[in-house]
Length: 88
Image (cartoon, rainbow, N blue to C red; front, top):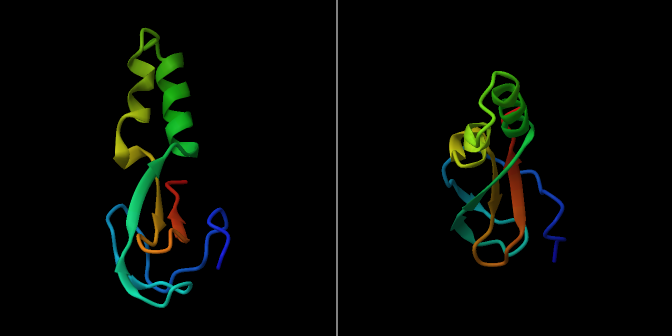
């Protein structure tokens, strides 16, 4: 079984939403499970908002918006990470 921390190359392009793939680990056709994690774009926008004067918590908004975070696709059956869609 593959290590769940190491992304495995997916055949189809990944994005924000779940995609239908055949898992290379368990060989089942599944709809990927998407988890959003903070990435480079999230931290850059937070820093940019902080330096523009949005200090009182508004600079933390990028951490709450999934469209500004990276999307990690995994198999719902065997929990293997199938790939990560990075914003930057």
